[in-house]
Image (cartoon, rainbow, N blue to C red; front, side, top):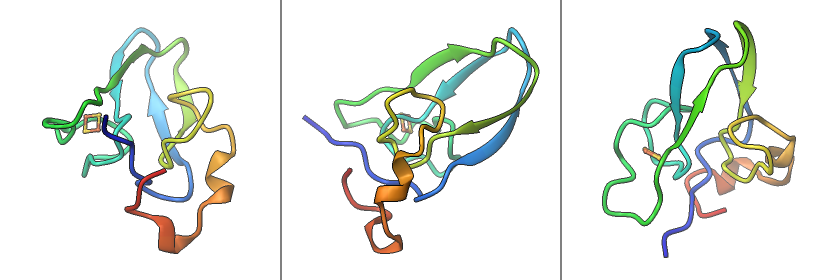
Amino acid sequence: MSKPIVADNKSVRVDLVQGNDYYFCACGRSKSQPFCDGSHTGTSLSPLHFKAERTGPAFLCQCKATGRAPFCDGSHSRYTEDQIGGEI
Ligand code: FES
């Protein structure tokens, strides 16, 4: 069973478009954070598909420990710079 890795210890602001489909990186390995770039291949993890409910800015999780994926819930505050790239 693969574990997500901490892509960053802060959220990222993105501009979403209502009704559009997005694939949120749940594994933390994507080089196109916060979205999937296929880097989860070979792990037991897969991206989270979501459809934007409204147009506008959103803060998406990059630590991959949020309890309300794909959105930030503040969980990143428990990770230091040194923990970036390590398992959650
Ligand atoms: S690259 Fe992380 S879920 Fe696809």
